[in-house]
Length: 203
Ligand code: GRF
Image 1 (cartoon, rainbow, N blue to C red):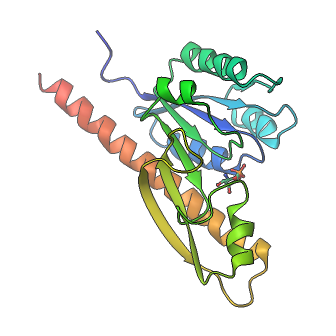
Image 2: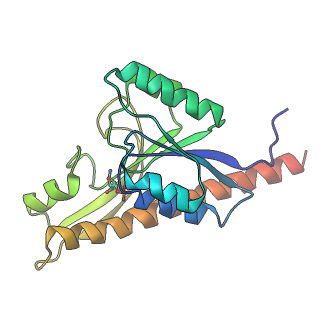
């Protein structure tokens, strides 16, 4: 019988700096009975997130891309299973996940994207929104489907572009929104876990 009191097992996938990954890990640590960030999966051996994971004491599984997307995602899938993952949080993971991977984890993969989707999908939404001269941009948290930044939206939050903004200032404002949104999402997961625990305790 599954242990209903066990924490939700989360794996983060990241490709770069890892500031979202660190934010998620630090926030989840406030709720050790509800959320267990088991590991980070990274596709880039040189990424700073690999060093962050070491300083945070979270195992990092580096799975470099070697030219075959299916083989790459099968290797990631086996890391996720080895860690008994129940939820995958994408935090600056810069590859598009393939259909067979998405099918295996549907409804369990969450991504953060720095625009008000469907506006500005793609790799550098801060740059694209900034160059388009928007007065308001935002951040979208969404489930991942087979498309590029198209899955069901969980939450959106907007932020302003100020007239004097440089791209860096605009991006920095958005990143703060990203961190807040992932923290809020973790809070909702925590509430669900607590609710599950209350239900199973009352049987
Ligand atoms: C974030 O802006 C994320 O939304 C985007 O890539 C960036 C990753 O930053 N997909 P970090 O690696 O979490 O610092």
